[in-house]
Amino acid sequence: MNLVFLGPPGAGKGTQAKILREKKGILPVSTGDILRKAVEEKTTLGQEAKKYMDAGELVPDEVVIGIIRERIVQEDTKSNGFLLDGFPRTVEQADALGRILGDSGMKLDKVVLFFADETELKKRMLERAKLEGRTDDNPDTIQNRLAVYKEKTQPLVDYYTREGLLVTVDALGEVQEVSERLYATLNGK
Ligand code: AMP
Image 1 (cartoon, protein in one colour):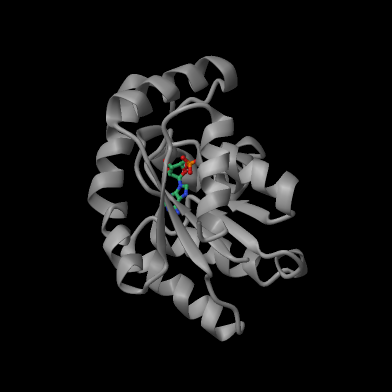
Image 2: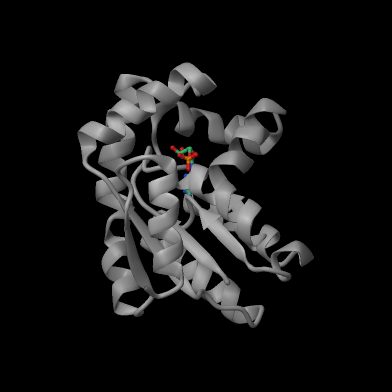
């Protein structure tokens, strides 16, 4: 099964992606993780991306599209499918994804939208800051990431609804509860 996880920062996409990998063997591909690793390793990509990430802005489309284009054709995405966590985030990225998949004879099965209210999302990100020490989990950057989500990424909800791929999962509650809702949705219940 090939999936996209869509939803605002703090909705728990990364956590649910890890669980799906353990339970179903679906390979998570997170552009955020790939970029954080590049920043840590101080590669050219990392140095370019860091300024955007620290400000809570999106890294330019061509950069992340390039990352996905290389990653998605690797063999490990083919056995049990892949799960894109945090990509696409703009209509341009979604169009590019459609082309990349089409060229490789692949397709998306579902786009899962995780939804939660802003107060809860902010609370979660501040808690995560304490646990993981992510530098972009600070109040100013969080506010900007939420604004960027609304402006640039939310249009993808309509985009994938039109394509008939969108399903929704309530992201509020315990991790386990959200997982159960996710399974039910993926199984078409
Ligand atoms: P995430 O871990 O998905 O919250 O991503 C952390 C940061 O990485 C974002 O705030 C962006 O700066 C950058 N990033 C991750 N994925 C993308 C993407 N698809 N497009 C642009 N920037 C991204």
